[in-house]
Length: 122
Image (cartoon, rainbow, N blue to C red; front, side):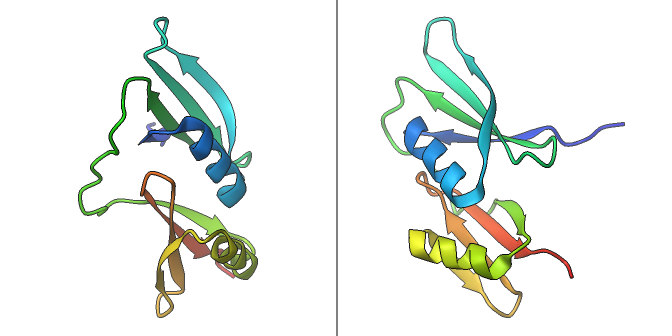
């Protein structure tokens, strides 16, 4: 059997990203790994409900923003209270695209990665 383990985003400012993911999505660090020479740090974030994690990779010497191409990829989250989650993201100013016809929207993290938010099925 094969199952999902984690997904990776490279980030420029690890502390800013950790704050964003906790505030916007409730994700918290579940494990970390730092290179012996401190050249990189990996922080795995979890939702407390599943085994899936988001790996944030910080490279010490990286200074320029990552080229995300046309952002034709994304991570998706289900929101139990979609309206309250949308209101929080609206207040945070991180909503970058909405598709009311499909009933979804996207937020953008500090590095420009898009994250889809979908309502829980009722």
